Length: 355
Ligand code: CP3
Image (cartoon, rainbow, N blue to C red):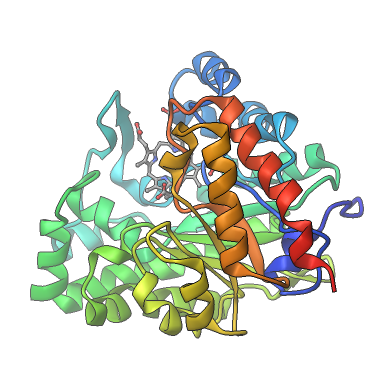
């Protein structure tokens, strides 16, 4: 493997000194980019794109050609696992993800396919290897998965949900069944992330997009516990370097102090938490990733720069901050506004890393 030329993202996650704050954007490969829309058109459906090694690699590289991002993220989706478990994933235009089958009973659970990531999601590992080769050591590659709870929400509801009524009813009324489902998912996620590291992923993010929908107690019981279990089973090193893990619970700001003890090297925070407060809550236990409101990218370049300045000042001096949005970038953002965002981090952050 070629030597890594830019390692400030990995260094910041380990809270080692860096020259400036590293950055990347959740959903950096996506519909706001005209070149993504063109490749997506060429591929057919979104899932066809994920399964096409060459095109998945191409869309991963697209944001890196435009912007000085300090990391690439595998182009795939969190819902590949439920799809491989046999639920039949498809995307209805404008409706988000949908499943042909759901898991709402012990019978449904028993009917899931057995799962081995290297066999059943071989196309993801092929994409990881191809992207690593294409990156050629320019920046590190992030692998990812959904959290068991987040995957369970889609599997029980059958798609996106506004109130999570079915999945929460199952958790509150049939906790044993829910724990069985979450155990199956935690095993699958640990295996999936391990296979991604073996294929070449150099850092990992667990997207707990819907953990924040739970009550404090239920969050620990149904989401955090399983992420902790996964993290404890992941490979600690690859190519002689640590493989840092970022746990991102959207809406988890008030639980950060607990999340910081889950074994991950970093916590992701959404825009509703003040980054200075987050830093106080986690202390020197973990690095922090975040947290500009994705909607700020619709504001003017000057306003974006002001917001970046505020977040950098909020985190303050020293390493341990990876700049990102507080959630994925929205389709419809002007790509030039992303340039303003990236330039602001690059120009305004070095002052926080001088002795
Ligand atoms: O960050 C990246 O650039 C890597 C790629 C990535 C995608 N999805 C590509 C994608 C990642 C990391 C994800 C994760 C994901 N997928 C999450 C967790 C992160 C989050 O946003 O909270 C969730 C909840 C999903 C499930 C999912 N997949 C949704 C809700 C959607 C949107 C459906 C829609 O029509 O808006 C998807 C589809 C999807 N995943 C797209 C992309 C680029 C859009 C597909 C398209 O081209 O139409």
